[in-house]
Structure formats: C-alpha cells, structure tokens
Image (cartoon, rainbow, N blue to C red; front, side, top):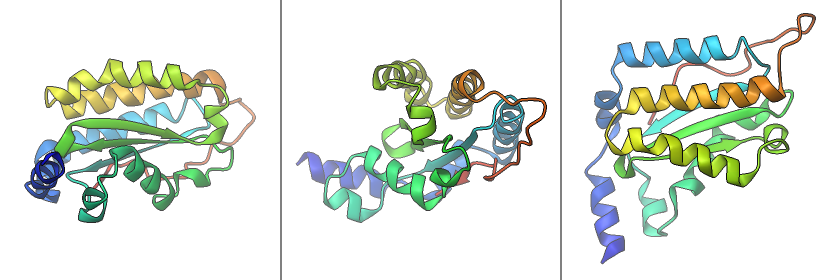
Length: 168
C-alpha cells in the first residue's frame, strides 16, 4: 500500500511543478549565487530540481538518493578536473534534498558532517521554501569548498559546469 501511495504522489507532479516552485527570477538568483560561490573555490556546484521520480524508480521503490547519484553522472558533475564537483538534488514530490559530492571533497567531509548539513537545510524544503533552501545549500557547500579547495591567485579557475539549475 505504501508503494502505491508513493507512486500516486509522484504521478501527481510533473515538470510544470518544478517551474512553479522556482520562477525564472528565482532561478536567476540561484544561478548568480552559484557563480559568486565559484569565485571562492575551484569546485563546481550543480543544482538539479526534479518534480518526481521516473516510474522505473518508483516501481523498484528506489530511494531518491539513487536518482541523485545517477544524475550526478548524467549531468557530468563527476567530470571536474579536481574531482570536487557537488550536486544538490531536490525532489519536489517528497520535498527531499540530497547532496552528492565527488571523491575530492568527500576525502575531507565525513558522512556525519553531510548528514548534519542536510538536516539543517531540510526544514526550508519541508516548508516549501525552495529558493531559500537551495541558496542555503549553496552557501553551506561554498564554505566547505572554499576551505578545502581555495582559489590561489596564480591558478586559473575555469567554469567547468553550467551554473543555472536544471529542472526536470
């Protein structure tokens, strides 16, 4: 029964829900925040907001984390030169956030630290405050990346991934 309820909940959401949750102006502000963040460090932050899981995930009762890990690869977040890309994944149907970080950053951040960070920001998503929650996520990850991957004045800092959030 729980599986059927979850499938129904997800089928009631589509891409238009993602567009309603984050207006074009909100996407512009989030994109600007990511751009500003990436001036402080050599890491890359990518945001993906998905209205609902594909039916194949729901049928298998797969967790949102599995989808986030798949999108980490599909959106090429793993493909940064210093292995310090981070995906912020927001699943609207479940109001759930997940963060997938490449091994370069995971070498410096423990699972317990990620859990605390996720718990701190999940309240905004549960209240439907998607823009402020995503900006808080960018700021928290910015602090981690700036600490572990600061930009040196001599190093170039190419923008390897798009800064605008992806809506699915």
